[in-house]
Length: 218
Length: 315
Image (cartoon, rainbow over all chains, first blue to last red):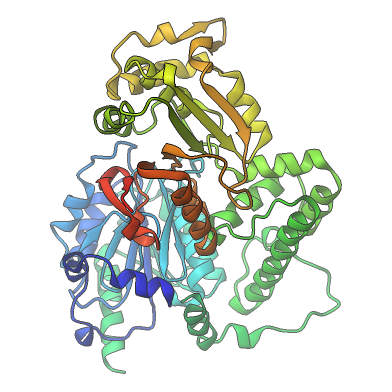
């Protein structure tokens, strides 16, 4: 409760920018969507984020493999096509529904119940940020209330993360290797885990949008 | 707040399905590759949770090193890595080893500390320190700097070089502390792999370095040995942010990417410690992705460069 009170003290403009009126936001079955991508991911993410409505009911955390330099245009590239605000979080930033959090360059992005933390420990599968680190921490913190989406990619990073989410009862979604820009990551995940949905990009967008409708009918 | 989250989880049903322990052979989360049914996974994960709790409690009581205030998500990763390093298959086996052998404890502490560092890491921070912080330090006849969580020391030596170039090193003392004796020993030596020097040199120039970086070290076949002049004003010593108190008053405290591994009560404790150890108008340098905003001390500081995690104590 204390942390919530602290957040009240955050500058008003900043909170206002991040939050849509809560009454319009339907309640969903899932609190968090984690998305991972590497090679070909920027185009795929732009496609996917463009499909999501402003009233999206869950928080979204994304790891896209990226170079170490801090001033990359990735947040702007994604923000330009999305109705949802896109942010590179600071350590301890609270998760809010309808906000897209993008793992900053050079840091792992981890999920705790209700907020995000960062870490500079060594690369995992040669990547920092690593998709496995995001997915595994999300599986630990959100269990059945997380959706993990693994998109196009050229490494095996993400496969262990999808397995962890499945093991904890979360919903797993993998881009169809047949239509993905790079099939290596999706195929690695499918080989390792019985994944719930294997879909082309359009199908993944529709599935996530469906979460809104499911929520609204309640 | 955490308890709210727990109750959400409980409502989703997983705690209700916890089964009492049976006489079945023990399994651990790491030895099970993939379990299709989530119910079984919860039992395994709850067991791992219990083992982790016992391990950390054991270490705290046996050795006085308390890791229970660390943030669970990254702690779990590093404890699994420690298990892997030791070649043991369960946390209980790791506990047996760490409780009985001091050298295994030292290895565990080193595995838990995230020793990712580099000369002039985040060069833009050093540019800001040079332009905005050093002029303020110059107004003091004697300057004390605390670098908390110094790891293998690269950033401490970077600071010494910066102070040297601004003609301030002679009246400064940098207290560099870390939890790990092993890392401190390496830091004290000031010997770094020669192959990293190209990268360090590039960072030095991006940080606004004014000279020839190669004059700061002596190279042999594989190593770069930093010059004694830089070392003269450094004091390396062990300090545990979890349990130790303040030991001096400082004009500048650097603690970059350390508090990100601590959970709430411990972070508060350390922020209290820093606040109490800073002179009024002293500077606190956090990591560039850390923010004072999410701490109870936010109103005691004003941002110097918010985007770089630089703050000034104002009350």
